[in-house]
Length: 271
Image 1: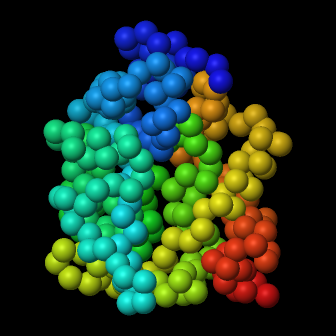
Image 2 (image 1 turned 180 degrees about the vertical axis):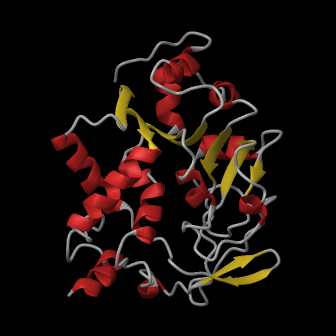
């Protein structure tokens, strides 16, 4: 593993030198263990400060804080509380949740943490029927001109926006609940009651298929490896590319046939 520059402003400078502008909107998916090693930095506050100084008050810093609070009467469920439920998407996201000025969306299964002013309040306080659909925070984020995603120490299997692409693709398979074999219902459980949902996000292991495609056919300007295993994705160009990829092969983000019950349930749409 090649170490990054570990100066006092090294992460901020890395992002700005690779095309980000102050005031942009940045979604971060990260492995804190990886970041800690490559930047020789143990303090979560340092990373949050570096990201925040790129997005600033005029942009938005966003991190996932999923809890997967689906109704499951067989295996049990956890009731989501946007103010107190711990984030299940990594150490850095939990530290960000507890940071002053950070808001959390009300989606009981796929909530996001937001700091900054670019995301309208409705995407924070309302319950999206589709957790990662057109009317969700990630749907709005995908339409912002200067929106970027940072994958730090993780690959495309962590790239949540690909669930959004699955939802908006032509003849989408996301009308099929992929988790029925695990007794997951199309309902979410929140502190104020039960909410019906559509387009339940499925398995993401097959997202590596798209990463393989890009690496084999690139380079592309909209996906750039800016440091060892740290990728920067330009959303406005990445989404059209992904939709074309799915038009060519609607099953291109699913696991290999016969290896995953969740993905196999959705493959049946095209049988």
